[in-house]
Image (tube, rainbow, N blue to C red; front, side, top):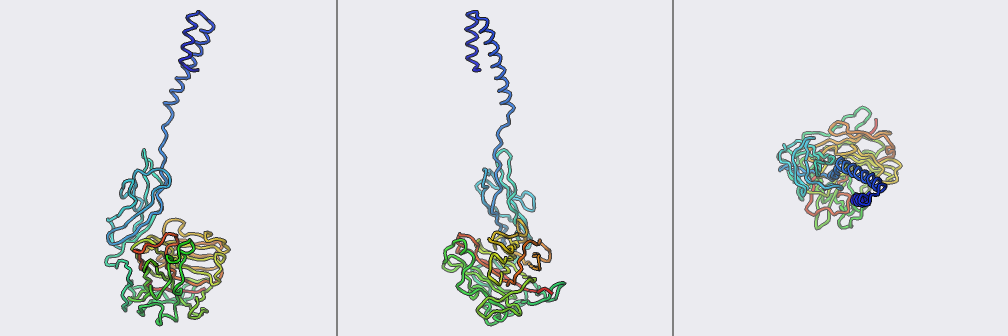
Amino acid sequence: MHLPGAVARVGQAFARGDVHVLRAGRIALMGAFVGLVVNVGAAQRAPAARPHTPSAPSRLKARADTNGVHLRWRAPARGRAMRYRIERGGRPLARVGRTRRSYTDRRVRPGRTYRYRVRALGRAGTRSRASRAVLVTVPAAGAPPPSASPPAVVSGVSPTGSIAPRADLPGWQHLFADDFATPTPTFPGPAYAATWWAYPSGSTDTSGSVGRPAAEQGHYDCARTCSVGGGVLALNLHSEAGTPYVAAPVPRLPGSAAGVGSTPSGQLYGRYSVRFRATASGAGYKTAWMLWPDSGNWPGDGEIDYPEGSLDDGFAGFVHHRGATSGSDQARIPSSGSAGAYGAWHEATIEWSPGRVEFFLDGASIGAETARVPATPMHWVLQSETEVTATPTPDASAANVEIDWVSVWRRA
């Protein structure tokens, strides 16, 4: 009942002496007051609306150089961030304002690997879940910065003092190894033609599959980007006049069937190891070192990639399943985050056996896949290319990939 109206009707009845109306009005008036008290109490008890908690920041990237670790990220897709909290090793490191999408951690040590996450802080004490974690290794003191010029070709032994393993292992018979001891300004060239091949000049990389214009796709040209010196195979990924140049060397395993101008065949199952590091001066380049089906039947015959990732970020392993009908039918190892970062020397190993693919980093397993494992012969490609996005690779970006050695086994 409307309270002012009830009061008026009770007053009129009192003046007339109308007992029935007076009694009814009094009851209604009491009911209205009770309702008012109940409503006021309910309003007092109702909790205030809680501000919407922002979602986690996305696309966290990390790049390390001699000045520190440089982080950048994207704002939450939902909710409003008032500030961002940067975490290192699971502990709060710093906070920045809501307009910032980057941070530089200068309290780092050369040669050390760090793990970062970012959270969005909202109103009234709300905070998002943590972003995807990234790992990054600070270059060792004296490490050369990436540039658009390939390293000078000099003679020498491995810069890491490591030698390609050549011994048989339980279940594996050694087949092929290269320590890149012979310097050459172009690769493969005459010095390595018998043992290496490369995607031919003029062919373009995977970025064409997402609609990037032909002139902006990565162009394979090992004569322009590959050299051997100082005990490493160096891949200098860079742009010239707006065109990115990339590389994809392929080892010729003993017994492989292929002429000088065609892709060497691979083998059914095997163990593949590579010691490498990479530095990048900007975004836009990646590795997808892979076992690719000799049949060319993709995605049906599957694919195995490791290490794969952006050279200014971290890497992981991927197994594209046998019998797949799309490239998204795959397993990622680890399922989130990175297995490691490119800036430090690492040894990455693929063990591919019947019904199982296992990935190793520096001798330790990072995980395995056993579902619908590829089961046809594959060849190993050290495919180093532009990012598979429609966004062109910045002209100023460059990356140097250094391969200390490679080694391959077959099933015993």
